[in-house]
Image (cartoon, rainbow, N blue to C red; front, side):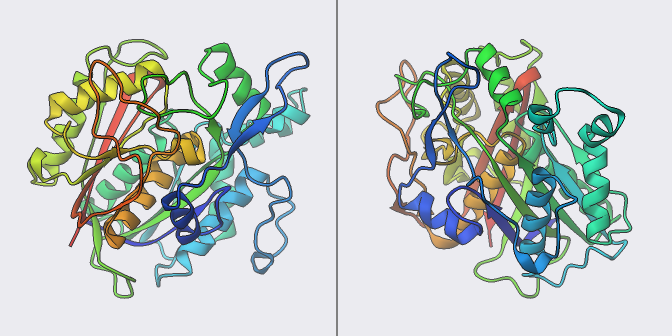
Length: 381
């Protein structure tokens, strides 16, 4: 069993979970237009932290850390301050999720020196972040494309279930860089404006940057604020369809959903809402619609927050899981910023605007390059 003891989100809409949740619930979006990646190119639409964002001064001087590492440290510090979970205990494990880590350093340092090569290693960032908090347990890194955050939470749940640890601090982050933007441009996956998740006229994603942390405990947390929520089940699958294109049938994501629900000992009709991946690309959203139908959850309210926060890559699964937990605790359905019109031929019950709802079970889904799929089930006690 894994209980959510605390959490944090640092996003362009706020430096805390509560601030980001309130902004998303109010229908706000941080997606804005930015200059082209290359001279003569098209402008890009993204959700970015302020250029002058700085970690809280009480964390001490962090100039030796990269922006990516500073985001992780700030998010972990804010989340763990809410609990008695001790990262200096060997019974607490640190699990980090990211897709590209410090890759933004290549924007300013095109020559790959030995020092730069070391900084680009995800294990390097995991070691320096763990050392900052004095964590004696070997940190883990989960980098599995866009399901990294979901996969990291599932890894942490399994580590707690094994009895190896009493608590897990799961954090994820990614930043928007020229390297990442140019990669998605090469795939022709970026939208020419604010993205429109689960809409018939969707045409691509907006990238985003954020950090998020979720603290999991093997037993019910003593100082939990609000209703207790647990991570009750989870599963991962792979459709082996294409390096970037998802399954055409949705069967493999449906398999992950079914396994996650089975792990939580819950039937499909117990799901009260779905926090979808909802990238607003033609293939992803159509695949999710098929998967929901195959898994028996197609009629449940579904939302995507990527119109509000962009696709935050390795942080997305954590950001969206934290927002799902808050939605369960506060009795709300989150809106889908940018939603315009029902998809065809398989429209979904899209949560277009915020609404009150007495929900107990939330399903979080994710999919990514390489055919990876993930699903998590959160239950309010």
